[in-house]
Length: 182
Image (cartoon, rainbow, N blue to C red; front, side, top):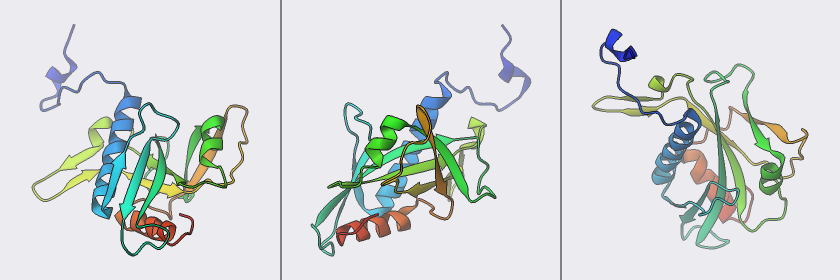
């Protein structure tokens, strides 16, 4: 067997972990960075009950409660280009998952975070002495009230105008902390 890396110098030996699992890990890393900058704690439901993460945000400025929570479902795709011209990224959710996320009367709000990643794994991460970058970007939306449209899966559009970063997460938590919706 010929080692393909031998023909190309400086190509790292990447492990055999399936791409879908790698994408889940990348999304988790993105969420961890955003949550840390926003001052949130994180908890991963064990076992997975249909929600990937629960974030908590504590502030005396919250009026509903000093500590509020947000449930997050992560999805990723490489089928959309960065900053797509159509203004949205589309991800498929199972209808059962969508029904869970779309419930209208909840105590803890839920959002969908959709991340566009490069198809080439080697382009996911860039690092130098002064910056560490994850490629490309994640966007968020509330799917409260959205009804399934497919037989088993529903394509859910997430606007690229709603970048999911620490500033957006702080604003979401502030709205929830005042008794509003994300």
